[in-house]
Image (tube, rainbow, N blue to C red; front, top):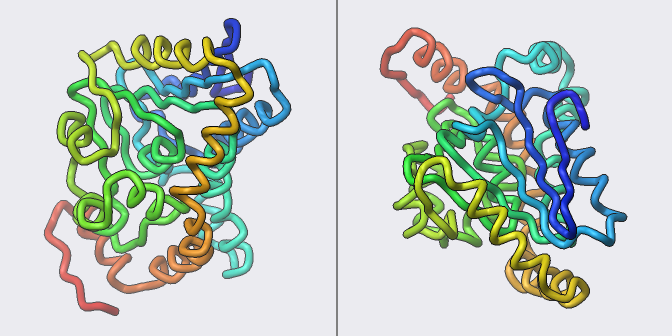
Length: 263
């Protein structure tokens, strides 16, 4: 058990919860590092076949914590240090994607930015009917990173991925189901219960072919993903230096429509 996470194991099923105990459950540097270590703790676990990942009871996560002191300090450093610090988010998502166990993400309420990136790194997503997903990065003058663009494209296809990633609009669970971002939509408050029951179905199967099948399916669907994401943190660092990014943040804070120039 960490400061922000708990792990419960029952038979061949594990449940990982992360909850900061506030109204946002944002992904601070410390939370992301802890979630990365939690994922890595399962790498040598041959007893667990399925893992349920969930956030707070009524919401998943508001995404990266823009008020995090570690983020503020990162932005004061040179490009080399900022580039290195930007590994935290993608490393977290990669650690969850690499697991041989089946990973099922249970989502209630909002799942924004990095929260959606983390959910997309899991194998299966279950959402409450009022839950919604949103990626605000592009409207805020940034690019979507954390190695998530190809993962979302794998799930949705390129046209819908462009609508979801670029426009930054809310995608509610029923439409997310239709678009392929989630696999199950259930009554509000039931996402974890459904995810836990599904995890048990995987856990009841012979564990070795379950792992082998997951890996072969992932290779068929995701073999080229690393080739198209190796520069996404560099793109993030670059967009962070643009005048449009500064204008986007200022307009957001001042509650006005931004004026973008391409600079």
